[in-house]
Length: 228
Image 1 (cartoon, rainbow, N blue to C red):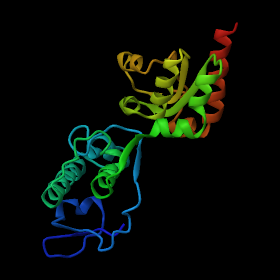
Image 2 (image 1 turned 180 degrees about the vertical axis):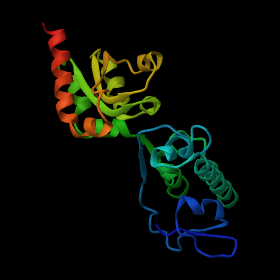
Image 3 (image 1 turned 60 degrees about the vertical axis):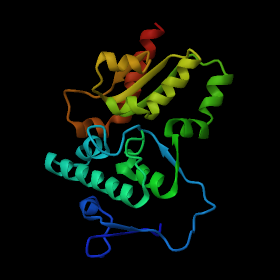
């Protein structure tokens, strides 16, 4: 996008998490190529940039990082924010959503003044979901996610579907491979039921390979129970 990040010796840094802590200078593009462009960050989570709710702590482990690496990445994000404050006098690190996509949303906000919009609302608008729940008589909505956890509560699609359905008093059932939400957390989603489809007697590889079959079986049994 035209920006360059230099270390203390004015050498350009390759953009990786490993290099975050080495950034000393930020060189903006010479030509304002984007002056007439409006940027949007379509976020499906509300994480901030660093700290316990930040990009490294929440997402790096999912990508295979160990504790030492998570601490290193988190420190790098803090360092980047300090450099940004020094060069631009801006601190957007605690704005909800800046930690999305490993901090990509933070970069869009700082360097392109991006507007944050809900990923769930954006997707639901694109596929006419919102128009359907407003205009039609719907008895039940079935949605799903690979894993229901605390991230689901932070604006992911299941959360968005359930929130809109609640406004129109439509019950929602969520299907997932695995559910790690407590009963209290699950209640916040306003779901009629959470159906965990995985066969706990089988391996994760088996469950992933046979996901379609397991989903069909779970839905059939649910419908049968509610329509004897």
